[in-house]
Length: 189
Image (cartoon, rainbow, N blue to C red; front, side, top):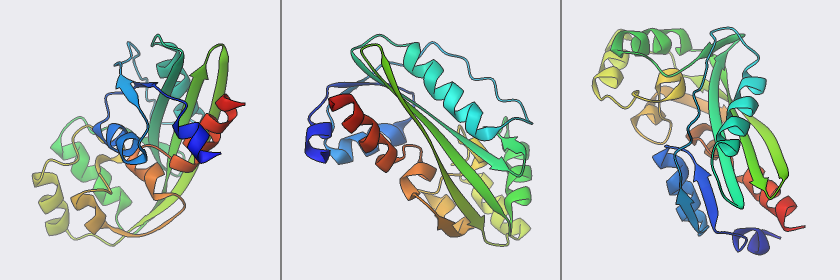
């Protein structure tokens, strides 16, 4: 099933994310990139799973192609959505909130194949280590937080902030591979 799914391409990735491009390349999936003409609206209070699914669907529907993949990742601390920080001060505030606590990372995935949508939402629980102000300053100074939901990147220096995860690591990076494989297998049928 995986071999047929991977051979399904070429896929059009409706995303600006270099992490998603990297994961698709690692998997050997042929793809092109088309940045979607889609504006994300991230209210502070929302159902994070529904928000991730809606953004993924919106991205997939905003791009032309026979096989289009839209993905969106949302970080939630309780019922609060932590979007991409607007500036270094907000990034530091997010890290203070996440320090020593468990939050959820939700990735919505929508694979549009012809007229059919194959959709999924994956959730991973991420627990941050207790952070000191020096830790937060160090991380914010490295600028890795820019353009990242929740203000961190687990695949980079942000890994030092994380104590443990429960669930799919690739989901936290931004593209849940098991959900992608299931969606692509569904498109093959």
